[in-house]
Image (cartoon, rainbow, N blue to C red; front, side, top):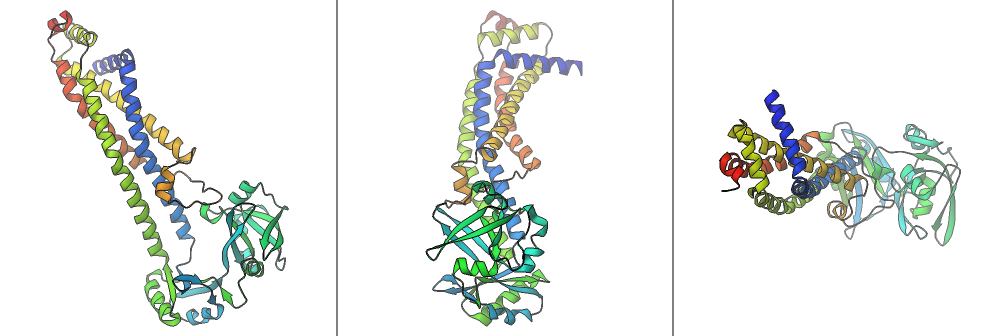
Length: 392
């Protein structure tokens, strides 16, 4: 044990003595690890966000389609689905996007019945209160939207509708576990939603179906397509699978594109490590002269390479974390999420995966140490007399 600690102490000292070279190698390694870890961290955060979003959606969503585009659907269509086996509830939803010129962006308007405003959102109100039944101009805003606008309970929100201005009273702020459900959302009464979105009475945006048995989703979806004709049925499970494949494919492609950078760095490290300077040769000669064996010298060189690799990799992980969750991953975010943007900007939450981090460290540190083995061996077998004389 004492011998191992002595070798480790020498390796730490050698790392400091060759600080310039080791720092350059560590920074190069940190750059490669930072890029790869940024891809993995961003992918994990996006997968978590969209998984939460899918979990909060109905089991099936029925949309009417005309000329290949979503259209309004009759509210009476609800009755055709309520009697089906495995159907727990069917609701005609009124929601959509309202462009606000002052923001130069869309706000998602969600219409809710008095029961939904009183029950579903009660536990998620973080400030203020829920709208009173019958108070058509009262609304609640997502906390992310409120932060972006500097909105507080009691403030008014002016929305342009049909060339006029509708002023709504924001009486509360709500929080959703998925940031997508509060990033740009304004929840109003169903009557106000119809007015803002120009949805006539008797029609709805879509039908939300919740099932008692999710395995029956395919049967219910087929029945809806037969009953309504030109409709599109969105299955919650298929949607989750689509997100998984999309982010997995994009992140995998991005990671593969970084492999040449890792290979180039390992080749550069090989070239840097194979050269032994006169000072290093004399050090090895002195060590072997005072009783160090070839295996001790080899272990010391491997420890030195391991310390450099581990330090650079850990710094790269930290840099990747800061790049994704503090800077917002500019450039990379658009490649994985898509070129469209959310307004306000989606705030990502870290989705830690220690196994993934350990695998990344192993995939980078182990090859680096392996590359350093041959130069370390060549250094360890140097004849002490020749090394101290400075000859080869």
